[in-house]
Image (cartoon, rainbow, N blue to C red; front, side):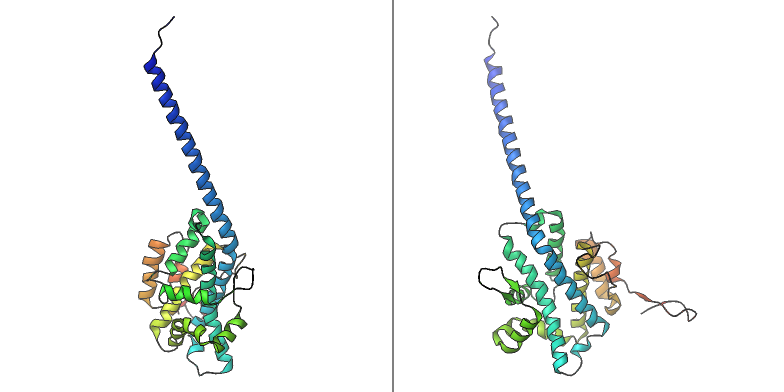
Length: 274
């Protein structure tokens, strides 16, 4: 009868236990990661479209302001103009509100655990960065939360434009949370730096819309940007800092940073930069 090799048996037992433990750990880690990805995907499915729609409406409003050289905030007051000014504020805070709703709903879920969520998270971080945000991040978040409506057991929702304008007109405390945004937009009527701040912010929101909804199924048809309205130094910071370093996954970023050429009628001459 062959002699039992006890040392080999001990080593084999220990080795087998280690392998089992390793496999158990690997399976558990895989399960946890999969659960995180699924939770992130569910969160994104719920909030992706509302954020994109709010971003699209904000882009449309900023484009309108850019084309008119912020005429709504340069002209004298009047009922019609006041509604347009309130609408401009509303589209900003509606976007911030949708972002806040995702934050409030996320709990321990990290939206970036999903690849599409990771891009959305990167855009949000850039929009709240010192380089891009229109004023202090805490004020932006507070303004977004200020328009949340809670009705019984239903999930909170953003105010609509009528609710916003009515509340803004009648509630001093509500207006307080919107003071920085109001002051910024009023300043665009006379201050180029304020205009450039809004246009720069809008360019990144525009890139968010085009990148996260490239076929424009949820959002409006793709349209041109407004780089012509920004000075060279602002465009350069967007191109070299924002899009090259932090949002390097954005394709055709020149759309948001390089001046568009305006075509002249045939026979008049070559196209020129506006």
